[in-house]
Length: 197
Image (cartoon, rainbow, N blue to C red; front, side, top):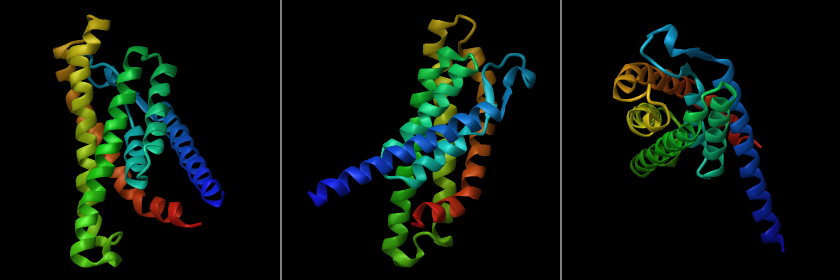
């Protein structure tokens, strides 16, 4: 019985963290956004800092619940801002971004732990892993939107397509780099807070 209670408690905690990251993702994406048309009239969508939340969700949790929460928050933000066609793609892209960054970070951190000892895992020795994982996640996001706009979204909206995907790519890369930078800066403090009981 004690094991069952501990398992439920662990599951509830994972789902709660997923909800927290979902709310954070929504707020950061919804409130801190700039329409791309202000920068490039050929572009579509908007710039935001929600990628930092998606990346942190993947870096901080081995559970799928937390990245799913962050992806739901970003997708709901698309709905609230009127980008309904983008919403399912945003969910999939943000989930892939978070999972890819988290998996890569843990794989590199495990290598560092094996080579340098466990005490080095969350120190400066993993900083290159953090940078690489966050930039990789940002690249996944930029390429995900490129593919979505060039192919699937064009079926829903004929004004989209390859020309818009190419116009949006530099902005999506810039958003990915900005999100990666913010996640890298916030990770040490957030990871300490997440591990403190």
